[in-house]
Length: 240
Image (cartoon, rainbow, N blue to C red; front, side, top):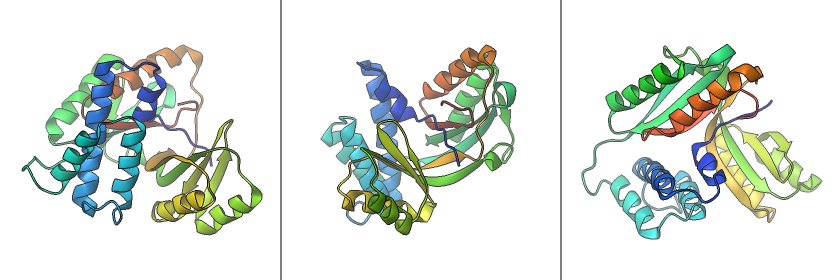
């Protein structure tokens, strides 16, 4: 199986010397993730695996501790915030490109308006529910730095790893959704450093875009990234 995902948080991290505006956007997106994880699984990271993962990610991105705590408290139902929900929009890009736009929002109409606005400006086409999602699987993804010894590979497979890919300086492991925690724990038990662990939409097959469409496609992805309500953007195009 091959994978490609266009991760908002990863993209902002890659932009060296990120602007304050970008950092502010990243922190507000992480805060929403923390709030939802705390709401769904409780405030104690020891018993809430998803919350623990997101807090680790937020700390790695230098999110201030008090901002992390505030987001947790909001998820615990203190402060009477509006309900935040996950909404998935399915977009056709150029030349067979499929794009899944995952929003975390307290206002579905605003989120839909943002996504539609990008589609109009960047020549994307919003599809109906299920029109694109069938091309993706919901999977657990664990990334860690360093190389992979044979005994560690066996331990990961025993823990539930479906697919192990060696990249140049890190390893990416795909799992079933319910095996994400076990596989991550196996990586940690082997003394390796987890750089990312999350649930993601992974394309079943990758496509290559002709060079003539690449620039327009990158503008489309970047425009989604800039939307306040957009959390993650996934595509079946190779290299993103």
